[in-house]
Image 1 (cartoon, rainbow, N blue to C red):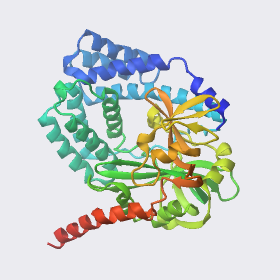
Image 2: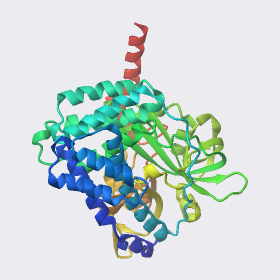
Image 3: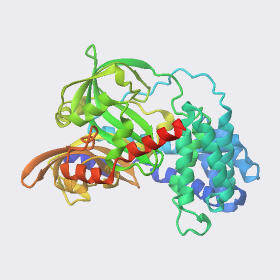
Image 4: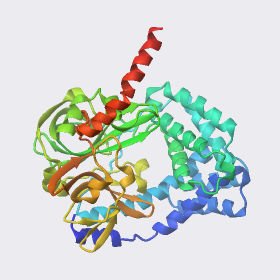
Length: 464
C-alpha cells in the first residue's frame, strides 16, 4: 500500500456519514434510559430513525414500531423493526467506508447475490432471548438489575443446548457478562452505550434469523491452493476463535480470491495465552500450516456467500512452504475481494488485509510518505509472539485495515523487523503448534498446563 493510496483513504469523508451516526446515537440513548421512560427528546429520536429509512422496504414497519413504542406498546416485532433500522444505517456507513478503501487500494469486489432462502426456523428456544432482549430495552441499561441477569443465565443455557444457536448464545453470554462487570450500572458515570446497543441489535436480528447469520446453505464448494496471510485471534471468557485470512487459487485457473476461514473452541476464563492453541487441537493441518507457514491444498471446502470457507481439516493437506509476505506482494493487489452479507455490514466489522512497507513507526502509529496511520495494538494476540516492541521495530507489515472509533487503524498480523541489527519475521500464528521461544516456553512450563489439568479433572467427573 503506497503513501498516495493511504492519503486517499485517510482524506476520504463520504457525505451523510455524520448524520447517519447522529441518528444511531439518538436511538442508543433510548436504550440507556429504557423505552419505559421515553421523554419528548427520545421519542423524537425514534421518529427520526423511522424517517431515515422511510423510503426503504423497512419504512412502514419502522414507522409503525416508532409510533407504538412511543405510545407505550413494546412488542418483539416492534423491537426487531427498530433493530433492523439501526442495522441498515450502519450498513450504509459501512458501504461508504468500504467503497473508499476499495477505491484507494484499487481492489475489485464481488457484488452481493442473495443466496437461496433457507427453510423457516422453528426453534422454540428463540422465544427466550427475544423476551430477555425486550426486557433489556424496556428497562434500559440504567435499569438492569439482578433479576434480568439471572434470566440471562437461563436463556444462554437453553441456547447452548442447540448447536446451531451457539453463536447467539455466546453473544448473549458476552453481553450479560459485560453488564455484570459494570454493575451497579445505575450509578456508573459512563457507559459503553454504542457497544452495548451494537450487541443488543445484533442479538435481536440473530434471534429472527434462527440464531445465526447467513442461514442459507453454502453457495459453492471450492478446491485449490490456499495461501495464508495471517491469523486474527478473537477471545472472550467462554470462547476463542482463530480467523485466518488467505488467498485462494482455485483449481482450474480461475482468478485468485480473498477468503477467510475460522475455527472455534469453547473455553474457560483461566485458559489464556499460548494455551489457547491447545483448545484447537482438532485442526492439526490448519495449525501446522500456520506455524510452519505452508500452503494448503484444499478439496471441496464449502464457501459461504460472504467469502468464508467452512473449515474441514480432513479436506486439506499441508503443502510446500509459502512466505506470506511474498504472497501479499504478488497476489494481494489483484485478488478478488468477497461481497459482504447485508447483516454483516457494520463499519467496525471492516477488516481488510493489506501490505505496508517502507514506513517508520513511533510505536503507536506508522508514518508513510508523510501520512500517519494509527496502530491497533490492543488486538495483538497474547497467544503469539507478535508484540508492540516488534511492531515498533518493523519496516514491513501484513495487517488488517479497520474502521473503529471514527478513524482508520491498522491491526498487525505479521511483521518484518530489525532486532539487534538482524532481520526477523514474526507472525501471530507462529506458536500454533507450540511455543518456539525458549524463555516463554520455560515460563509456561513453570505455570503448568491449564488445559491438561482441566481435561483431567473433567475426566474424573465423567468417570464418577
